[in-house]
Every structure is written in structure tokens, then in C-alpha cells.
Length: 308
Image 1 (tube, rainbow, N blue to C red):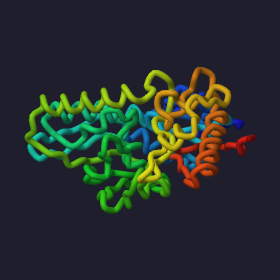
Image 2: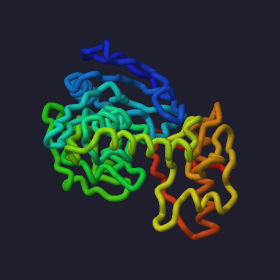
Image 3: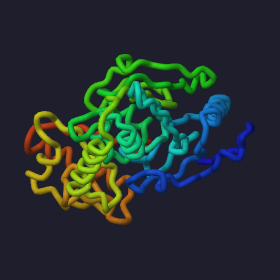
Image 4: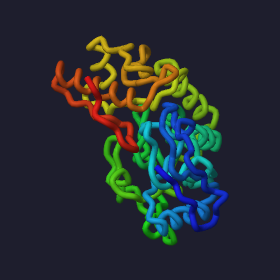
């Protein structure tokens, strides 16, 4: 990549050749040609307009969980939305609006303290509101689709016209929404929660859910969370573990010895090694069980086929 100096303000918001490993929970990823962390919706829309005028591809990331970025990096503009934070809570109606970069664990605790129920399951999800909506994130038997009221989005082709979509317009299914196929950027989301509940009990339930996740999953090493969708009624982790693949390594990427549906970075993994391990697990499970595993993780950038 050979970035050229942009011809539009705000130049202070734009940075060149920024390594993305610091912006993903796997701690891998090459440089972004152009990179910015907008701290307001106005700045975000201005940056989208700039990318459009310059004819550059653009994409948005949040906390960088559930994301595998190529070692070669990303062309065009990469926007990290994790600074777009803020939540408005109506404890009477149970309606909550959260900005796209609001961390899910922060939101879960905040609404519990307000006596609003329905998001206790989400406290262990290491992502942001925007990413959780796009992926229909779920855990502990709950998912975003069950509580989402509506979402405010913008089409990068028309960044001056944000608009709202009701939850029933997002075609939610297991770890899926229409936002995965369309170039819409989530600005904020509104949730309908259960009002008038006991904050103490909600916080106790929230803490118990977090303890359950941290005790059974490898939070001590960089990962993306669950790598594969569960091929119901089977569980991806159980299929991988049954084949004796816990601890399998390719370079610095390892199938977690604690939970087989996690691939961890043991210290110096490259994105290509993680991708090769994903493909190896898919091949092994397909060969021995006939079941196709489909990744939850989203890939960005160029990946070469793994050498087996």
C-alpha cells in the first residue's frame, strides 16, 4: 500500500499505516492504510464522506473481537468506533439507547443497576453494541435479537442521512443479521428491557453469568471468543474435543486446552496461522463426522489458502 496525503479536513483525525494488532482481541493484524477513531457521530459521518470523495473502501470495527484481520493489512479507511460511547436509560419504560462503541459488559452492568432486566447474559461478551447487533451476539441462552427495539444506521454512500431500522427489519437468525451483507454502519441501538426489577438480584445474576464464562473459557490469552457457530444440536467445541484436537498448534496459534471452540494466541501468532488452524479444524471435523463447521469470526483482508 502507498498512502497519499488526503485532501480534506479533519486531517488530525486520520492516521497512516496504523498496525491493527492493537485493535483486535486476537492481537494480530497488519496495518491500516488510513485509520481513525471518531469520538462523535459528526466526526464519523465526516470521515465516511471523505472516504467516499476519495474513492476509498471503508469498514468499521468495534472492540476487534470476533474479527481476524490479515497480516497484509487493510486498504482504504478503517474506522474504530470504540470511542463512540454513551447510554441513555429510562428506568420507567425500560427503553435503553446505547452508542455503537459502548462496551457490552459496561451496558449489562449499567442496566442491571437501574433495575432493568434482559441483558444479564451479555456481561461476558468482549465486544461493543454495534458489533453485537451486526453479529446478533449471544451467550447463556440469550441473544441481542431478543431485546433489540431498533437501530440507527448510516449508508456510507449517503453519510448525511442516518436512518432507523426496526429489529424485525434486520432478518435476525443465529449469529446473523442483514447488516453482515449490507455496508450499513451502526451508530446506536435501542433495547427494550424489563423495568422495575430488583437491582441487587440482577447484579447477582450478571456476576454469576460472568463467573461461569471466565471459569470455562480461556480469558487469560488473546482470542476472538468462540470461533465456530454451533451446528445445533451439536456443539462445535465438543466435536473438536472428541477428536483429540485440544492443544493443536500451528505456529503461535493453539486450540485452547480449556475450551476447544477457542483458538488462542500463545504470544506470537500471525493471522495466517490462525486462519490455517481454523481450516485444519474444519477439515478434521468434516472428515471424521461429516459436519461442516462455519466460523463466527469475520475475516478482513487478503488470506492465502492454508498449506496442509
